[in-house]
Amino acid sequence: MSSDDGEESGYDSSEASSGEDEVEPTFETTEEELRELTASGWTTYDADHCGELQLSAAADYYDGPSGPTRSALAFADSPLGLFFYFLPKKLWIRIAEESNRYRSQLIPELAQRRREALLSQQLQDPRKSVPLLAEIEADLRRFKPIKPHEIVHV
Image 1 (cartoon, rainbow, N blue to C red):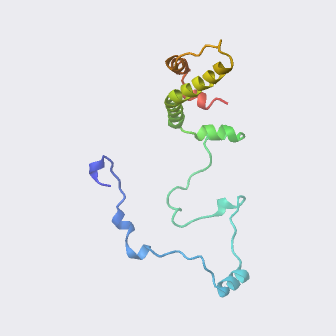
Image 2 (cartoon, rainbow, N blue to C red):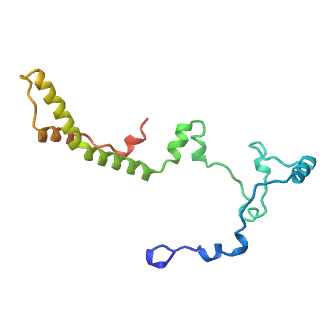
Image 3 (cartoon, rainbow, N blue to C red):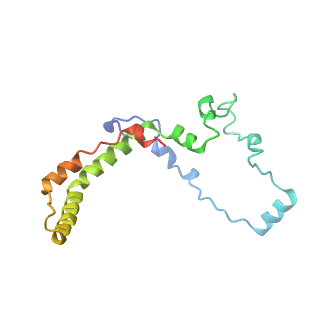
């Protein structure tokens, strides 16, 4: 990225465009290769043996203990608990803001529909009074806005 946009990055896009690294991966296996795999076998790394997988490129990064943090482990028994543990607080705030904005944008349309429904009821019963559109909108605007903590309240 350029320094004009306020972000600095150690990534140089010219490094990624070198011709030698742009080999298209192919997943085609010849019959000879399949026969060789059948004879020699292969190592399967499933959930029970994934700790045995050692990649040469990753071996020099970190060799200490690994696993979930204590705080994440506290929610391990509950999928819903894990969901809320990893749900960023900024997302809660954004969802609440957008929900409130959407509701505010709908008020004129909702008020119009409500007034039309009341007018159609008034045709059947002329004694029924119908409030003005502005009164209906004012009533709809009195709704209590959604707060971010209410998004995650289950």
